[in-house]
Length: 211
Ligand SMILES: C[S@@+](CC[C@H](N)C(=O)[O-])C[C@H]1O[C@@H](n2cnc3c(N)ncnc32)[C@H](O)[C@@H]1O
Image (tube, rainbow, N blue to C red):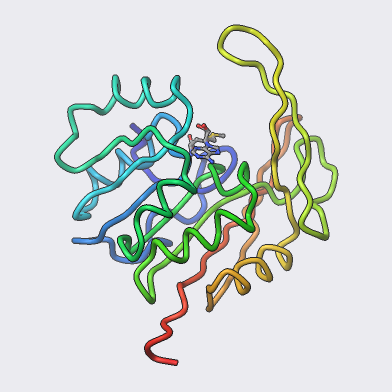
């Protein structure tokens, strides 16, 4: 389990869990949690009501169960597609976050409205995502995915979609999905062939009752 929560591509510094606000007693979910390392860190080092770590991959879910199943009172490990989970959780969460997770691997015009509906009014979404493609090609200036090749656990090459978008594209998508107070910052990724800058995005569900 990491000692520190990091949003950067290299997991080596930058802002930490403070980006989520004070999560004491809050209902939190990690969207595309992988092995649930970040979620376990929050469950152990902070005092949320609970953290729900959602991932669609059977292999990642099995790994998170092996590593962190013993934290079940504070950490719930859910094997499910994130958009499906969010649609079934209207108004449930105070905080949603994603670290290079489902937000960049899922059609954002479906995931972001589902995230807004799963948050209570005023609830917070924070996510880190690639600021440019791995290898250096720029992020897309419109809502467009990139096909990437990945190797499955049994060695086959499969295609996946990744949304690598410029910050103003994310901001427009979030605005259209019902978020406000949208802010972005770039986290430098250092040097080296696999280094990548990250975009850290935070937004809040519109509080319609106050409008
Ligand atoms: C690059 S990994 C990041 C995992 C984790 N956030 C971390 O930082 O270690 C992306 C994860 O998102 C999950 N994922 C992508 N799209 C998803 C979706 N629509 N629903 C659930 N999980 C998804 C994948 O299964 C994968 O485990």
